[in-house]
Image (tube, each protein chain N blue to C red):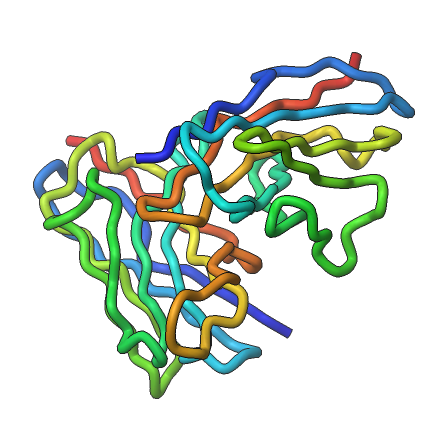
Length: 107
Length: 128
C-alpha cells in the first residue's frame, strides 16, 4: 500500500498567515493527488485534484504543488473560514489512501 | 445539482450485518465511480470500497480491512448504491460517507477517480 505521510499534524496560525501543509507519498503517484478540507461534524470538501488543479469555486488563496513524491497545499493568506482539518488523498493505485490529516488551529 | 444521501446507519452487535444505502441525484449515475469512505470517531478518513461505472462493468474494489465482509451493489434504474456489511467488528464503528468521483464514463484508466462530491454521512456503531 502507498503510505501518505502528512505533516504537520497540527498547525497554529493567525488570520493572514501563509500556511503550508505537506504530504509525502511512499512511492510515485504520478500527480494523482487530491486535497480536502473538513470542518467538525461535516463531510469533507473537495479543493484540489491532480496535485495542483483548483476545483471550480475554491478560493484562489488555495494552491497545490508537487516535487517528486512530496506534495504541498498552500493557503496564501489564512481566512477565518479556513480553520479546519485538511487531508490529502492518493488516487493512483488501490487501495486509495489518505494522509493522516492536518488540523489548522487559531493561534 | 448533485445530491448524495446516505441512510441505514445504526447500532449493531459485533458479528451482525447492516446495509447502507446511498441515493444519488443530479448526474448520470453510470458515468461515475461511487465509493464509500469512513471516519472512525476522532480519526482520519479511510477508503472502504468502490463501485466502478458502466464503462467498467460496475466492478468493485475494497480495502483489505473489509474485503470478504463488505460488498457494494447498485440499482442503476433508481440511482441507488448499497454497502452490505457483514461480520461487523467494533473497529468498523464510523461515519460512512457515500462519494462520487469525477467523470469516469470512458473505457480504460479513469484519471478523475477522486471524490468530488460527498454525502452527509451515516453513523454505524458496532457494540454489544
